[in-house]
Amino acid sequence: MVKTIETNVDAGAERGFECQLAMSDQFRLLTECAERAGWSWDEIAIALLDLTDDYVAAMRRPLEAAVEAAVEGANFVPKSNTRH
Image (cartoon, rainbow, N blue to C red):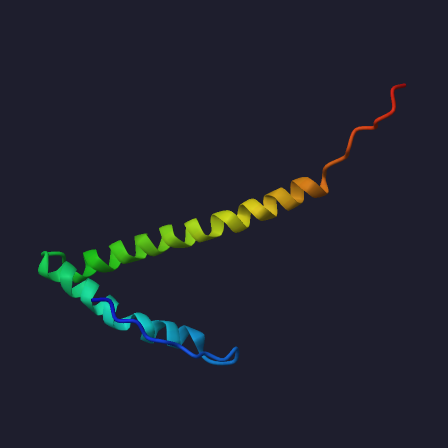
């Protein structure tokens, strides 16, 4: 069963810490499961870092695409409708 923590976080609260706290139990379960499967702590850590890199890249893709589209749109010069 997935345990969720209901948060009531102010804009000025330490959100990073709140996020870590909310994920800590599931993170511990994940790493314990990997250890029971025979993976070493350093293999687990490297896998988590690689997965985190993939997650960050996936989350940035839409933002980068939006920025690229905005730049292309700013450089767009419409053709004249006149027939000279």
